[in-house]
Length: 406
Ligand code: ADP
Image (cartoon, rainbow, N blue to C red; front, side, top):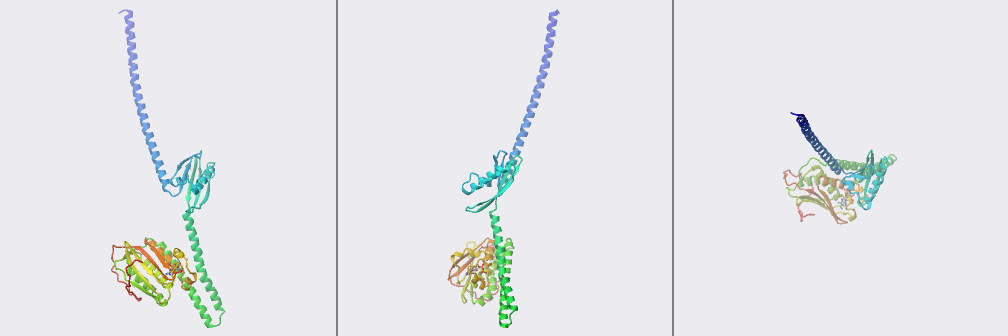
């Protein structure tokens, strides 16, 4: 082998060695690239999962905020609204009075973005009339606005305030009268006059007692929405109420005629409440009729409803007062109600009983001709009641027209 050959062999060996090294590097490189791809793919999956979880979280939060009754609005530091829940949406691009809300939100938001928390009450004259409170909460990176409709709360507060004022007035009157009468009595020497004064004190005390009693009944009925229910036959409830009114009816010379109802007419109800409602309707029919007048009571089925009508032929109610007679302490004729011992709470009790039983009370009346109050209740067809009707000491008789809807 000459020198040239030796060099060629050497070069060949070197090239081979370099080739081997290169191939090994390429293999390693490919493995490294494959590893990097796998890591990148895993990273992508993780990011996708995190993104999906974040989207899920955001949409759950949005759904939760959509479910609340307040309007919620979130703005970024530049003042751009990045979230509005469903209620807040109704004020966006609003016209007329709702535009006032949007304008106020804009102003308060600008203040919140410079770190000033605030609230503002806005009265919208509607209709419907509404009161809204807008509250802002500044964040490090934006601000939150809450729009709260407090109309119902305001209305309830006003009703409660009126009620307390009415009660105070209703009780103050007899207490004041009793005080004056008692004072006069202490200075009275004539036994006949003293007796008359004492009798008037007793009347006032009874009047106050009736008001307190009705208030207690009303409070009990209001808190007994889910009271125990039992199947009560219309006949039985009517008989019980008529029995309670009997002494008063006899004293006033009023005849109560009851058309005996189908024994299958049953209402799943709180018996005490139903009897109390019927008693109040009968009491009014007796109080607001002339002596010798007739009051009729009848119960009829009307589809899946039971209608118990109490009809009198008394003074009647002016058309303009018909809607209001169910309000607490509302009286068409103050003097007459007082002289008959009315508390102004009877029909409020009846209406509460009806609503508690998913029913209603309606009235038809003509001035000078009389009134018909009808208690409408869902009929219970499941359970006929065999309970005997309590004995009655006022006339009961089927009259012409029995079974007619009043
Ligand atoms: P009151 O205790 O004054 O009778 P209610 O709430 O029972 O209070 O009735 C409210 C008002 O409705 C009464 O003051 C009376 O003016 C009127 N009213 C109720 N029932 C009758 C009726 N059957 N006939 C005429 N007016 C009635």
